Length: 249
Ligand SMILES: CC(C)(COP(=O)(O)OP(=O)(O)OC[C@H]1O[C@@H](n2cnc3c(N)ncnc32)[C@H](O)[C@@H]1OP(=O)(O)O)[C@@H](O)C(=O)NCCC(=O)NCCS
Image 1: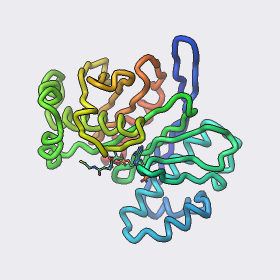
Image 2: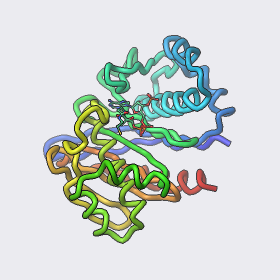
Image 3: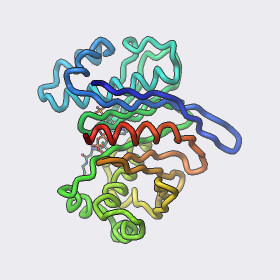
Image 4: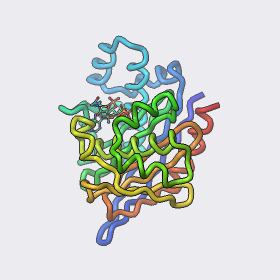
């Protein structure tokens, strides 16, 4: 079965309000292949060069969820005419959309693909990881002493908080469009606060941004937004919790 949730959310700022789109997709590889018609010819050519099934799957999860996130924001777009190219640091670049200045942030993990579409004036970044005790040692090696201390201050298991901090840093690297091609200390998480079942963080150096994280089932998703923005993510997190718990079944 393919599970798709799409929607919009507002990004409120002191003097402006923006709208972003999202798509949360859970799918088997077979069902994804049935969506191949949504690829632009340029994307299809690239897809045909991919040799490994795992990468074919993640590429489709990313492209299909990103196109559907664009569709959530601009319902009149013909999604097969939109191409999402990879920029020089592998960041996604939306091409040929009739809605100008739209961009996307993409993440995929297992059979889950999540994408946000946003107006270029208001960037967003997203990251999703499975909490896996086996990865915790590797993640811990990448965290700063300050981040390691932070992970002990919230009521979650250590492997969950380490993965949470890691997804915040990856989402930050996506909003910056650099990816992790830097000294990871630059992305240091400065604070970690529980807010209901969500967690909010600020960054030591990139003080213009903040991260909001949700842990559901075996997954953690973090979204990074400009620090002074209030995003209305209630519906997004509800769908994320629902999809993440089903994905773990
Ligand atoms: C970009 C990066 C943060 C992605 O995170 P990830 O957990 O591996 O993978 P995710 O599924 O969450 O995200 C992948 C998507 O991020 C997006 N992405 C890739 N590079 C990006 C960048 N520089 N900026 C913004 N988004 C980027 C892409 O859309 C990609 O999906 P696609 O290739 O299907 O289009 C990370 O892989 C990276 O920086 N890699 C390059 C450097 C590196 O490998 N360092 C390892 C040091 S530990």
